[in-house]
Image (cartoon, rainbow, N blue to C red; front, side, top):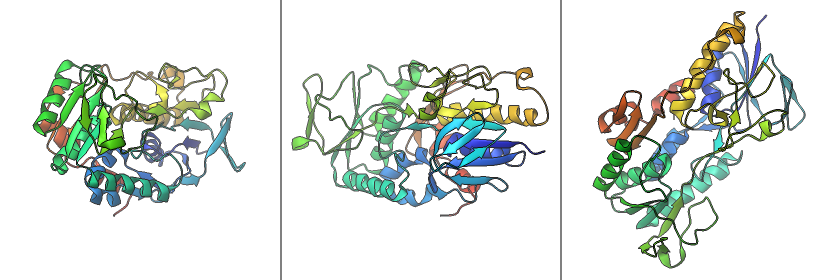
Length: 363
């Protein structure tokens, strides 16, 4: 008898795993939204608005055999997902892949696609009108956004502000040095070890009073637009209500060697919500998806989960950081690399053709 697998969350991890298992099990992918947003490419779309129509795509052709269930899960009872309207989706295996939230407009914060697109176009309009743009937060999204804006809109003065003394301090120093040098070549001003005084408690772009902001050292800089880009937050509401789940200091659920957060042997978590040692990046979750796909396929053939090799994260943190289509740097398994490989792997096309194929969709 075909096993039923319920996957909660239609982000990167959930959709990848659903597609990989579609021929091997009866898949139900539960997702409240009608369309999927390629968030990685949203960074470039803010600098090149014509991309927006290419990176928001419907779910309806993602699976050939399984089904997409439109709804939001309110709770989990054993191996069943209970939707907000009371509908129960029962399965033999349940996988939670609810991902993370991020500052607007990089990810949808509600289920209202129209409101999200309206907000995104409003930010695009703000960018278009601004001459001096300050980006607060120099992680992957902030640094990539600075590079994309500087490349596509050289008429703008972009300032990247970070509270850290170095770019990407948790990675090899060579990565941060390469990124800082290339950002400088693009004309980006990088201010390290600085904060904005009296920063608004908001995660949305805003126009500062008198078009100026003051840094923590007292230095004022011109800014027609401030874009806060401060970190991901895992979406763990479902797990908060389950007994015995514990969380790390990032709010990610602690798991056993087989990505299970509780004593329930058929409940798995994957992606940004799982405390595996991987970074909250596509590079990290892709490894998890590959392992869980292989493990569950063997389990469906009758092999016990406990008899299989447990998951191991990347031995060191990996990341791909394009700065426009031609520049950037990456931390890969063999070390830090520069523009050529970063562009070839990610920067040139940002995986957009790949997702058009996977969702069987043409803009």
